Amino acid sequence: MEDKSFVTLFIDDDPQPIGTFPAPVSFDLDTKKLADGKHTLRVVSKDHKGKEGLKTIPFIVRNGPAIAVEGIGKDEVVDGVIPLMINAYGKGDQKTFMLQGSETPQSIPFWIIILLIAFTAWAVYYHITSGQTPLFK
Image (cartoon, rainbow, N blue to C red; front, side):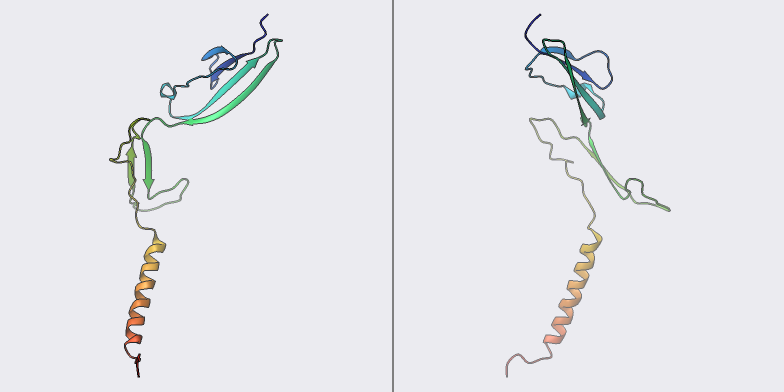
């Protein structure tokens, strides 16, 4: 029997391993072969005496285009007509960056509109009242 430990890698509940490698191992996991969504990497190690160790690592794959939706949120209660803005954009690859469509336009938050109205009202009030008091005698 060898004096090496071996590592076996599994994805999700697949009984067929990705591979078995002598430890330590450097491994490139190609997520392009996995569907977008939640997955689990199971690492099973076996030492030279036959003892096993197990580590599970949950991860999320998102190789497809990112989807941004504005106008409705998760588990939101709605009625009537709902205006939605939906953007889907790919991120390119790890060597290039796609500028077109990579940003999702968003409407101005309501609190900024309130601040603008309050500031404009204060500026008009200040302009009117400062014109009535003499600054110099």
